[in-house]
Amino acid sequence: MNEEEFKRRTKSLGLQVIRLVEALPKGRTADVIGRQVLRSATSVGANYRAACRAQSNADMIHKLKVVEEEADETMYWFDLLGAAGILPPAQLAPLTQAANEIVAMTVASLKTLRKKPSQPRVNRQPPIANRQS
Image 1 (cartoon, helix red, strand yellow):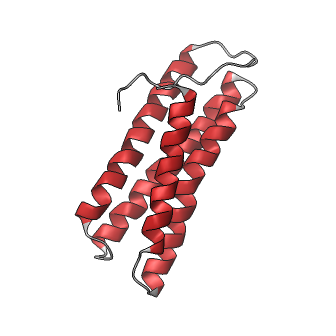
Image 2 (tube, helix red, strand yellow; image 1 turned 180 degrees about the vertical axis):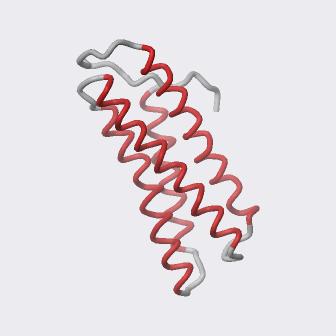
């Protein structure tokens, strides 16, 4: 998967979560969790775009760690929405899988980057794991 495909994938997750949050039942709990999942899911794509503009391998590693953390947090909120009975787990399963795949690919990219010596980045793409989606 290349940089542009991964950007599309992270943006797609954000858009799907926007639609999910808009469709949540009205109530205090759904509103609070909805805000949290909206914030973390949309942050995944924004932080990946920032990682693409990193100035060094170390900078990219730092920014990709944020992508990993936000995607993992998003999965937590999906789990909570299901466990609280706000949404059926089956409805959340495709989103959880998408976020989990983003985490896995980000972790693979981090492993690759950590093996490389730190150097300034000059128009290089981040190494996104070569996985078929």
